[in-house]
Amino acid sequence: MLRTSTLLLLALLAAPAVAQQMPSASNTSYQNTPYQMVPRSDIANFSIRCFKGDQLIWGIYPRGTTSDNQVARQIYYQPKADGRMVLSFLRGFTTGEKQTTYVAAVDVNCEMAEQ
Image (cartoon, rainbow, N blue to C red):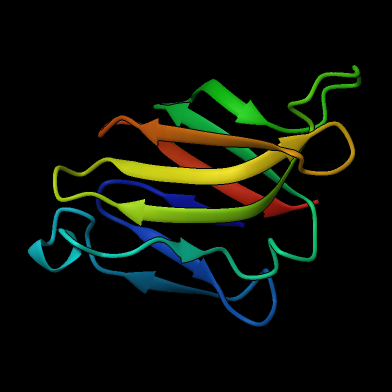
């Protein structure tokens, strides 16, 4: 699982269960940071769930319906100097086909997990 927040960004390593802590998104070294790809999101389906506190406010995850918000692929993230996180990805019903960008507010945390 990958979780973004204003103070913490966990990046998946070789196995989804192994994670590494990265510096704060408000760190000045991130002001011009290019997008970075979530490992394995180019070959596997992922879910994305974004929370404000304990409340789910947005996401791409299986819903049991035929919506285009079931799977995410090609997930890229970019921390911004103001503490927000930008997510850019492909989403769809069974495969990622629709380009989408989501900008998480400073107080929103997003989790990404391989399905």
